[in-house]
Image 1 (cartoon, rainbow, N blue to C red):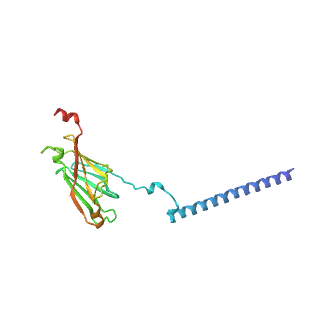
Image 2 (tube, rainbow, N blue to C red):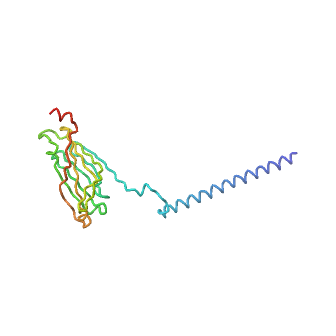
Image 3 (cartoon, rainbow, N blue to C red):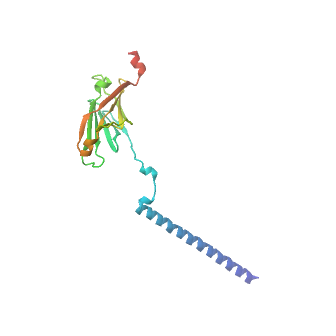
Length: 199
């Protein structure tokens, strides 16, 4: 009987070792296949499809301080502009760097003064806010095309908001010439209509 028990124990031990060996080999083969696939994906990126990466990303952001506010906005195709408002002078600038040659200066420079449009009172401390929003203007056949964004400047004292945009000259951009012009005032609206009616 003890001989039969010993043979059974040895058989069970052999089966357990064989099963463990098979599991280990399977895990090793799986790890090798996974590593080969990862290596192929890194060396041949065209074999993988990432639909979200193919989409052009256009991020905008805004920030403000006591005497200056800044915001970014997409001016033309992949060209981002930075809008800067100086609270002390009321000057609003937009600079558009060349996205293909960042050391090549600016593709476009625009300027306006918001004081008159917003009815800012002289001598009163300026209190502005600035943001940009997307635009989808109709495209004409001319060389100048409206920007893909609008810059909104709000005067917290008067409660008025002014909207500005610009025209982007495609021929100047292709020729590498820096274009400079005025920002276009699209309109002014009261942020506090009830206050406007009382006055």
